[in-house]
Length: 169
Image (tube, rainbow, N blue to C red; front, side, top):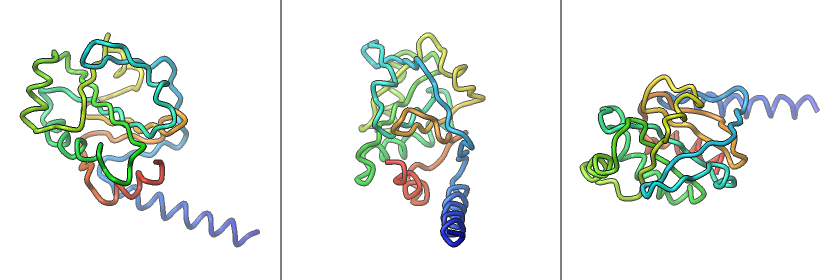
């Protein structure tokens, strides 16, 4: 029994250390539950996050005027179609009060092809998630619970990040 406990501890601590090498990743000590999270798609239809339970979800908060958002968006676009993450849903949510036309031009300038544009209306998600800046990405497990977040920009094509994320897919 002691051997089993030590083995589990060693595996979990090496897993945690591997994840801490990922730029701007903060792993929650306790899972966080949110109720009533809604946002809008590009046709102004309201979506409820709870409708996507069973999927690994990344909520990425961004704005067209945000230089770090512009830097990370292409790698987020590639991540959406990663062959080993077929249960992943990415929702890039514009919280910069930008309209659809301006957001579409932003996506076009970066050659974003795999992601859709979503909006926070009426600007309540940053407060619900306690965001302190953008970009911020909230990682939500299949049960609808936040298990980690990325504060600031990151490279979503980073092999360490993808390997770590596959554990939640």
